[in-house]
Length: 235
View (cartoon, rainbow, N blue to C red):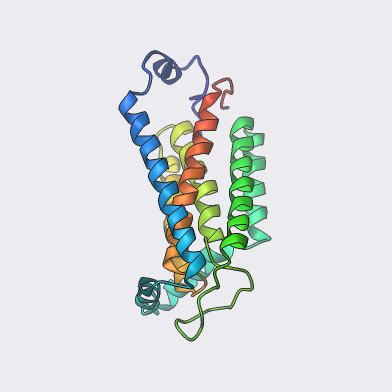
């Protein structure tokens, strides 16, 4: 596996970033997305504080739970298992240590900061919104959890942390099968974790969607923070 020192000022890509700044319209699109995502999230949080679930939440859960193949159930359980402590902390810690070991100290710091702050903010929102988990009299619940439901902590974790790893993989690795495989891995985890939380009856679809929105905002901020300093050289 070979890393490209894309965050070094001496590389052609870094020079291109200096001499050819991002077009203004891209910045406007990015800012517009952040504004829309935050606005929708706030609206969902307000509604989730007033109603236990939406009609479409029950409909979506029942539709997903109709698929009862044993391999699919095992996959959903495995992906959700990754997001529970202590394994979630061990996996994240091991990856951060690996980044430090490879000399990507700034990437390691930003990934850890993004993960810790996003999860802390997610817990704070859970306490404020205080939405109950899906009820077993409405949908199948694999295991009833004690805490509240909005937003999904699993989705927030996967989007903010594995999303940043996807960005690092795309940015720092040379085109190769390893790069493609890792990008598929991170993307698959992010995409399936939301389905797994609904399938197991531990979150409503609106919890999951809101967490994807919040996670994408946090990921965008982490990438912007990472790209501010180009002094680190990948090794």
